[in-house]
Image (cartoon, rainbow, N blue to C red; front, top):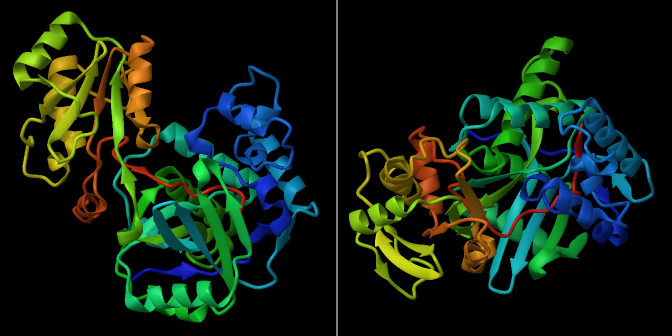
Length: 403
């Protein structure tokens, strides 16, 4: 059963939340982070993207990058901008757009739950990214950003969430990029939340596989140093936002091919009977849209390669039946001829990239569903890379967990 762990969070004072809050580290490049943080000395980007404060050309994994991140975090937390709660709390985090709202429980999850598969994964992690996050956590003695998890909701948990949000105003209300409203509540009445989540059989990683794995590695390393037991120390827990699965919204994660030969295009048209179409976003599973030389085409995906849950996903059918046999892309994680475009950028971004000659062909996908994510996780299978794009994104800098 799931363990949640209330903690003494560090929060920006409400009047400084707009100055501090920033997008997560993994949705922007160093160049974009530097531009967004320009003339914003209190932006949390200085903590999660500390390379922006170092001389240009500093190696990404240089010791100075990790030292700078720790220095910037210490400076923020010791300033008048932040305060730490005097006792452990449970926080609630709400995301609201014009036509969507989701409210999650912001707390800590257990490394032991992750290691023992109470928290289920659906993606592989890369050792270099694991190493990077692990070093940041160890150097900062903090988990600076939360992981997004999902779960099958219960009436009891829904009641606790609603009770908290309707009986008090939010501590923080922030309008972020794209008009997304971010709200934070807090309660020190934590026992009921802990009890009700103990009845949840499984939690699922939605976004943040590398942060989960790094938290596990950090706990293992510090446990060995301190000769402590699992669950005994604060570093055994890492911050998460737990959103009910029926509130999650997944957008497609589209694919672009940088170089396409005439023979490959002809083979694609012949093998899959492409037809010109005005449809840019497929309406059903098994159908995708293709943009090439200024024109949109529709095609049906080949049948699944096997009966496994993961092979029935559109992203797997595209990889196994199209990208590898037609374009020779065997490993989309490492092949430089393929790139990925998050669904929030839409088909306009696909057209822009092709029309500008930056890529030659784009695949507009139907989104993976939350149920498919749970099914894959429950079977212990792994999705192809970049299978899900959750939107809206949680922001960084609202609540920090230190140990």
